[in-house]
Length: 104
Image 1: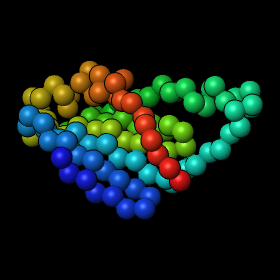
Image 2 (image 1 turned 180 degrees about the vertical axis):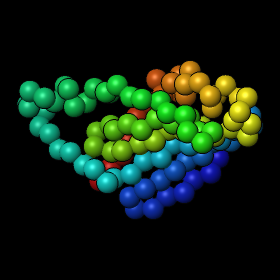
Image 3 (image 1 turned 120 degrees about the horizontal axis):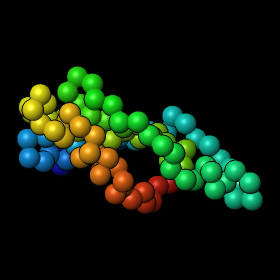
Image 4 (image 1 turned 90 degrees about the vertical axis):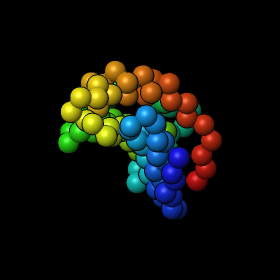
């Protein structure tokens, strides 16, 4: 595992069988909303996301609780490795993400 972090940004890289899975987050966008606001439930629910394959990397960008995230996988052999050609592997990881902690 590798970690790169500073005050407003981090990337955690997990080295798995002939691939790297990366999770990045930053604080470039912050949104505050009162729990009494009628839109509160809409804001905290995950929105639909688009999985994109580009230059051998499968990735998804999303926003949770005012923080921008990127989840991606880069494969050693992106031309034949389905994890980088099809979204199933990354979608499964995305669906299993558990967001915990955090502080301002």
